[in-house]
Length: 431
Image (cartoon, rainbow, N blue to C red):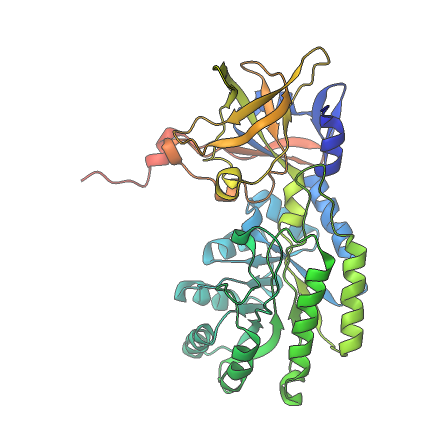
């Protein structure tokens, strides 16, 4: 079966194209960027990512809404600053992500905090910063927020996360909306919790929310979840409903990682949301938390071929980047398009194992993948690596963290230096 990396890149990538056999980031040759900054290298087209955010915000413009980018997807300071400058809010999952968002220039009133296990320190930092609200996941968490806010003489705005028991039909590790999951409160539990929450002196219940999971391609999934959430809200006492100002619909809209995958028409999604709000007469601001949707296609991981090795059964393309750099294939068996940075019309396409250098058989990016022949010292691009790539990386096998570069204003610049060996041990102590 023939493969066409140019067509595939056009379908799944944002701001990466092939021209005359050369992979480009914007109009900059990826090979030249890799030679300049070394590999493994995360490379983002931040110009295109910001353009994607603007299209997303425009699609929602008829609604009273606030987009809060899910920082967990990619927490690069340069990326965050570009989104903030474009008017995007931030959704953080820890005090570390809060620190990053503030350092990148986010206004506290445009920050929300999510997370099923917020520590006391997380909540203290959020309240001290004066963020917009906390997305709370349990009565126990609300009690903790109330106690800390009381100590500080503050009143905390809280949106309670509802678990509507909707199957997202996605990988079980990234599904979050079923009753069996740790996230949020079920409908019955939420009804029982509200009388407790409205009596708290330092917590103000200002809304409800949900997040069904990630990589959701069926528009009916979100529609079902939103319908259950709206029905729940409409059963509440009028005095509770009168104080509601927000409905958080989370994120999770799927993005294609392979040519055969489509995507939800976003305009259709917004139309469904608008109809639901109209039918339910909810006068609230909609909060959304896109992460992967904005970042995934705008990044690649550039790696170098260390060896091409064959045995009686298989040919292995061994790269200098591994599961320490991009964990998703090993963790989720996730699919990423993988293609040479330079295409050569004279070279054959064959089935290969594409693997990293880590001492684990699981350090495999693709098995039996058809790819054009590559040779030692050449570069290979792993596509759709802009989300849950660098943020999930590690130093396993004492491999330094990869460098990160980005196209900003049409110029390729370094946005995170490659870690040195000394950097790796700087915080360690010898007895």
